[in-house]
Length: 87
Image (cartoon, rainbow, N blue to C red; front, side, top):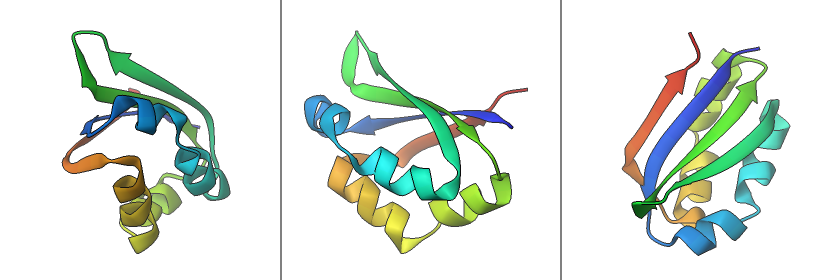
C-alpha cells in the first residue's frame, strides 16, 4: 500500500484543519491513516500524508467533480497541489 504526501496552499488553515471533508472524501476510496501537517513558517501551506490502497482508484477520484467540491469546501488552492509517492 503506497504512502502519499500531498501538499498545497489553503485559504484558511483553521477551517482546513477542522474540516470533515478529508475523511468523507478519501475514506470511501480506500484511503487510510490520514495525517495533517502545517508549515509553521507559512500556515497557509499544508500537507496530508495518507496510505492509499488502490492508486488507480485514487487518481480517478482526484479527477472527479466530488474531489473538486471537497477541495473548494476546504479552501484548497488546487493549482498549488503537488502529490508525492513514497519511493
